[in-house]
Image (cartoon, rainbow, N blue to C red; front, side):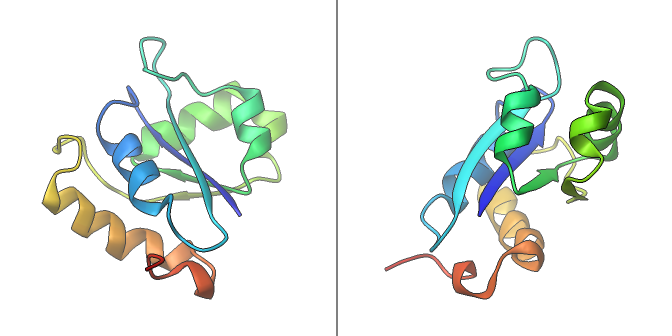
Length: 114
């Protein structure tokens, strides 16, 4: 399963999620941002690559639906509801991501590989 994590600038939240879930069984992760000044700006190719799109805030989902309506029409995309209050690899962010992302992972990917 290919999971794309989205935040605004692809600076703290989505890169943390990408790294955190990269070692899960059967999971490939990437991250991007919706702003033009993001480290990696989301585009059609990234969205097509993803089996699952997880956004941090509702504004991210709204932008994806507005800018990429055809691609997003049949895409599985979910809101995590994680505000922009965290830094990269913040322990509180990691705990929140672990709890929220688990809901969307296949059973074999729920735990990190040892």
